[in-house]
Amino acid sequence: MCDNEALNSSLIAEALKVLYAETEDFLYRNKEIPEISYLEIQQDTWPIIFLRDYVSRNFPVLIKGGANHFPAVQKWDSQFFMNNYPEKIVTLTVTPNGYADGVAQFQEESHFFLPEEVQMKFKDFLTHLKEKRNNYVTYIQQQNSNLTENYPELLPDIEEFKWASKAFNKKPDAINFWMGDQRAVSSMHKDPYENIYCVIDGYKDFILIPPVDLPYVPYEKYLVKRYKHVTPEGFDVEHCSNETIYWISENPLIDTHSLARKYHIRVCKGDVLYLPSLWFHHVRQSHECIAVNYWYDIEYSDLKYCFYKMLASLCGKSHVV
Image (cartoon, rainbow, N blue to C red):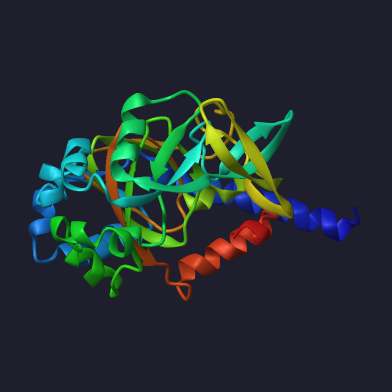
């Protein structure tokens, strides 16, 4: 390495240390995500407060009981869907281990696996949830605004959060419906969306890492494969040509050595979590948990996104942004 390269490397390393230290106090002071009551969001000034205190700071907040007024919170559970929509055809994912869109071992090597996608009657999906068969984990998790596209009959039981749309100055890009097995896990990842996440039944456990800690989030390059013909007896693997992807290689449940600062928070029935864009999140859930989330597109002209791209470049991760 030439002197200039060594100097540049040293300066970048020192700059990252400064960034970590300077964000420690305000970012990680209490090591907890703030919680507020649903009563606070009833104020006329709440959209401004939300924008000022959380969106502009790119910091999460948990609103306890923020969705309790939804009819869905009182109505939706497995029995409700069995009674009202048993013959409805639903699209869901199936994996042998609960990790859809995540890293798993195959033939003694780590690969990035996509789930098998299948269609079945709602009653059959609910039966699979009840039976909890080994090596067969089902999850409704399509992220294409599947609630508005595939479950329009459920829309009267929820509503758009007007305070969020006012603060973001836009309508949600997508409204997604989630329901599944407690073995279903969302591996650590980030999204280019402002996320308003509501638990309708059960609970979700989130592990969060702020985007400023990107330098300490390990990525590796994996070959992409897809589960096929998943049954309790086994599965096939589809090799997706030579397609590769960079994905987070650390499991936050067992890997604790990373410098990345982690927040743990449980979102219970009726709660609403504001999960800011670009925050890394790993999610587990209770069995038969039901959730709805609202995605608002990130502002790419925002200085926050520009800063994040610069940080990614400085730490050699521009390929994962």
